[in-house]
Amino acid sequence: MATPLPGTTFPPTGAGQSAGPPARVPPPPKQPDRRLRLEDILKLMVADGLVAAADTENMLRVRTKQYDHPLETIAAMRWKSVKPPHKMMTLDFIVEWLAAKLKIPYLHIDPLKVDLGAVTAVVSNAYAERFRI
Image 1 (tube, one colour):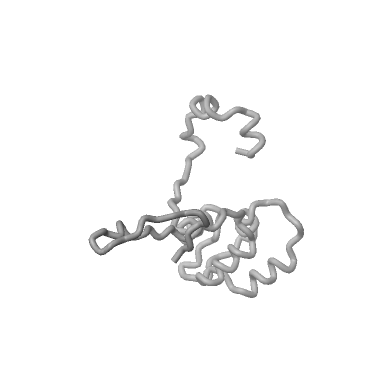
Image 2 (cartoon, one colour):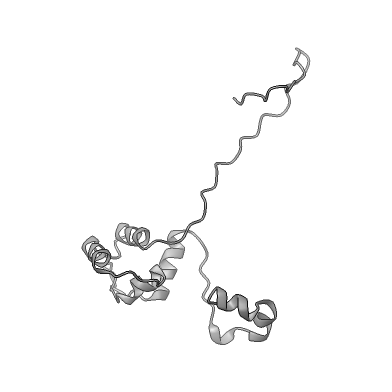
């Protein structure tokens, strides 16, 4: 039970008075968002049986300092899934798998169907260049 702050007074509860509604329990603290890390994604892939642990360890050992997105780095390896039907792990495959794993919706945006007039009216050129979109 929480301790009241100094100087806080509460009316006494008598025999005929109700104590009021039960105290609301605060939700658990939300963990802060963070960037995707290559090591974390590879651990999830090994846990799901998509790749062999030896392959991921080898990749982490020999990779050079790259500034590519971790999902692009994995897709560049051109691995095939260890699980049948042994699909090629393309960027789309990995993104779709990760979205399902994290329980977030996956939506593929077809760049040929984007209304550029509407997008450029909302997003400035400087903003698009800054965030590489």
